[in-house]
Amino acid sequence: MTWSRTHTTAVLLFVGLAFLYMAFSPGSIAGQGYAGEEIESGLHMLTAATAWAKGHPVPPMVWSRHGPVPVLFDLPFLKLGKHLVSPDFMLSFEPCLLTALLLAILYVWLRKVCSVGMTLFLTFTAAFGTMLWPYAYIGLETKQSLFVLLAGYLALANGKIRGWPQVVLFGLSCGLALSLKSNGIVLWPVVAYLIYVQFRDRWRSHRVQLFTIVALVLLIWVLGSWGRSFYWGPLGGGTSSFRLWLIDSPLQFYTNAVGVFGSPTKGFFVYAPIMFLSVFAVPKVFRTDRPMGVFALLVTGCTVLFISIFRTTADETWGERYLHVAVAPLMLCIGYAWPRFAWRRQVPAIVLAGIGVCISFLGAFYYYGALDSAAQEAGQNTMEWLTSDENWNPVLFNARLFRVWFSDNGTAPVLWTPAHIWVWTPPPNAPPWKSINLKDYCQPQSFMIRSWHLPKSGVALRIFRIYVLLLVLGILLLCWTVVSSVKEQETRETPRLKPKNQEVRVAAS
Image 1 (tube, rainbow, N blue to C red):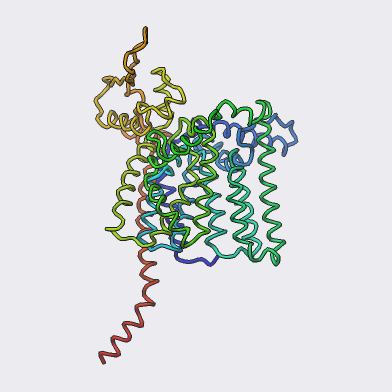
Image 2 (cartoon, rainbow, N blue to C red; image 1 turned 90 degrees about the vertical axis):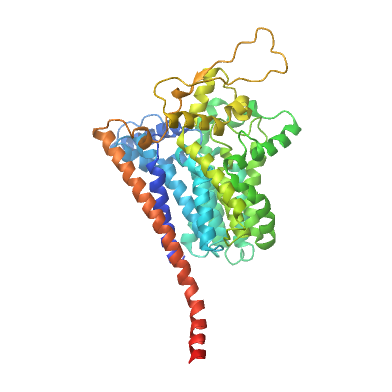
């Protein structure tokens, strides 16, 4: 890869987004999904390594559900956290960095096919108008999504893979895309297609490189599967654990597949509205750049086919989290389909992006577990209610919380009753719907916002100042990114304009 001004701008974008995401970080990640398991597993890894290095007895290992491979990425943050504040605090920054890196790759890829205006519009829409923003704090999906996009970039947008550094990087990216999560096996068609695209015309002359890539992919996948067996084995195996959740009718597969995109409670188009344009973009990209269209369709299709076999396609987290991996590929399809930004033509995209920013803001502003806690207090915390009941629609629920928080009516309780409509007569002895106090759940998850008006001292004051500094630097760097992108566009256009100017001067003389 030849370093260019585009890559310099991408670095500015990465740092700016990382700082801005980190500024609103909750300062803790242990309560986000299975992150607590991985923290415990990582700390045991560090303890075991220290004991082994010093010749002490090695304590028993603690395993997490996705195995040791994703935990390896956590170790630097956990190690640093032992000296600064806490491991939980330092690890809360990791998904912010991974999301910012994913967006930097998206920017570089879009810049190869799109104008500066369209590249910036799609990149910032992905950053703040889709599920990427809330998951910069939730984590869970960020590692897999990053390496799927990186593997796609190396295979489809960076030319032929020739040198050994590229071979190793591509092999590692493909292997990690399959191994960072237990459901990575469903992405095998994606990885196989990327390898096919790279070597379909030259596999004979590059047999050694092809064999190395395949060997790396298999090695990492086997290592990940082996590591996961230590967690799932005592539970009877991963397959047996999922049987409770499997559908019992083929028709449910169809309804699930439709709901993945259009469910008002968990639908992909609700939590990333700009993705609605991909319905029109993917067929167009198939005609103009088929490998890109196949890549996006495989990533999305394989994931949808997998999650549609379960009774509920989502859980209590924010939206269709398993489709987090499809956001960047589908955003690329939109860029490939409409590479130039025109205000009048892009009005629908601008409207969808604006709606997405509002929805994603609500997801980033509150901890997703607040809804689950409220449902438990109301006695309605079934998976079916949380994934399909309008009362427990996360977007609407967080909007209620935000109105309560913004109104700031002191300590007076704000009661809300998640009532339902009986059809048409309530059953005998039906218990009344229980009311809950929304004031108990409207606390923002951002440490900086949460502690803005509170008295601070010591470590808390220093952390608050760091967050404020990150906010200021993040905004400045993102402004610098925009300016740098515009200057880069002007630099590209100048050589084409110069001969015309010279012809005008000659004619005038």
